[in-house]
Length: 190
Image (cartoon, rainbow, N blue to C red; front, side, top):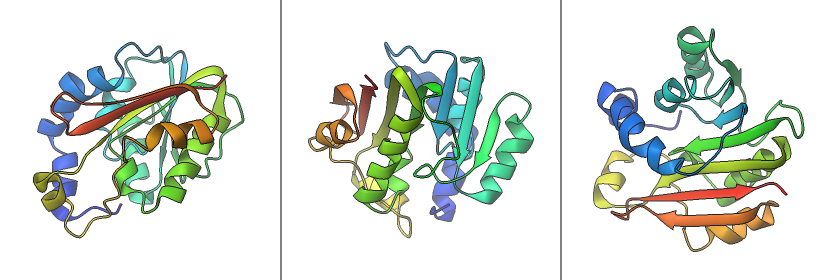
């Protein structure tokens, strides 16, 4: 995982897990119908996964880091399918999932081209009518400090609608968090 020690510690903390459950996921998934078969790209230490396993009948988590994927398998393998793979090249079938989600992980993807491949893969695995939903952080002084020595490639909210549309999504919605510290996005596969 391209994260420094402080960042890893924060993302694996009980405080972060509580913030995800109480604030991040309710905001990111407001008015989103996930359906029965969901893929989470980039679950990291599992703060989102911990909440999602109780919300959806069938959950697949795709994690790029082998050690983290093994950790998730030990923790959640009895309730979710954990796949060690790159979100830009998922070994999942075409048009098989009702929703693809990703939360606060895209800024760890080094280039926009790689992020766009993740969007294209999300589109590929979604069944018609399926939804991509997620959120990511926006830069601030605190955010930049947390990412010293990390990959930090934040999403430009004004460019995101065109990028999601280019991947094939329709009904694209992108908006900022009330405090301006995050961006939420969603789009549908026609």
